[in-house]
Length: 510
Image (cartoon, rainbow, N blue to C red; front, side):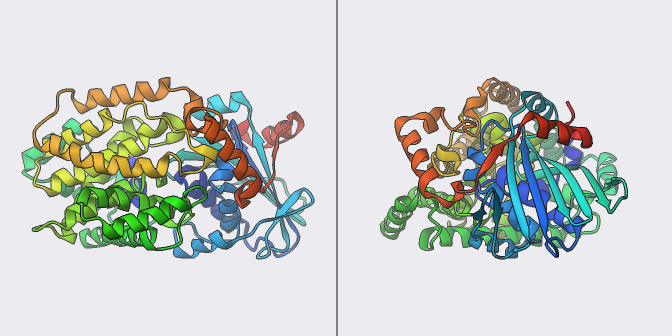
């Protein structure tokens, strides 16, 4: 992935809806763009077919409420806005072999899974977590959309086709917009001509050292180049808005009703514990868990770099910000440092649990938090990068094996553990502890992630790792009978249906 096309605000730290960046936000984004292009969806009787391509199981999609997210996107609830929160209240109901919601009386949905291994291989070549095919048909018009979830909430609209009446399908072009400021081709080209087009951690450290600046200064100046329509003050304001959402999440998770499907007792215990705690590291753990609970409950959080690791950075930042001599502005500035750390990892390896396991989510989230704390405590660029490197080293090989396909066990407690560990990583960084260069660490991270069996990435078939323990299997079985998230039926696509789709959509032809 070319880092010049990535920005901190659009690709590393941004508002998003949980539980999952790749499985909730990304499908909602694709559906929202499809509905926007179709225009006035649901005005007449409408059928919507959704196929998840390259998946091993429907568990992650159901656990992450992918179907509900797609319905929300089709309702024209913008996944980048606060109004998307209404999706939490949707109650999908089964009508014979279709799904409907009261807010969309004229529209019926069908959900399918295509487990074709050939398509899975093609998606992996594109570094895509999975593909989505959406077909919208109403009276004399039809639209077909294919998209990919790239991990971390990023999406590609690969192809769109539209037909009205007897007209043949016409290809449509759609540029996927991003929240905040738009990074254009002009911005990419401008960055490429400057010294701020850093491709490696070594280049980043060298540039900051030569200029006598902090990494956050380099990151902010880089953002200003690739977003020429936004001023430095506006770029700072976008990030400050993210911090306010994080603060809100920490309070909501500690005092609100965001409890998740498996974590209601955890939430109750957490609230009681924090009320009597006076240990800052214990509070760091609790605040990270609190944010994770908000995300698990389909709340609006800030991905850093993903929804699954969203609690680590804010918890560490809050703890450090409460110390004498620290300020909110220092937090916001160093969030840019955390962001460019994530971009460099994302460009070289991945931030997707489905591709590289949790080392790419909580591991990178821990590295971001460690870098932020190191810089806030006065660390130089080399020390900041060393802290991030320590976090990645200690996270190598972490599987992504959630029970029931939910971003809860082990995700919620792992956010807490990684947040506390990030404090130690920062201490190591400030002590100039860095033996293996981070570029070499990233090579190991990439290899370990590739070597990690697919069974331990997003718990794909729901029967490995923690998800495959007797307790995990029991909880998963209970969820399928009691949780509304698992009530929506998914059909496994047959050969005839697969051939029908492949014949008309170039991207999914094998």
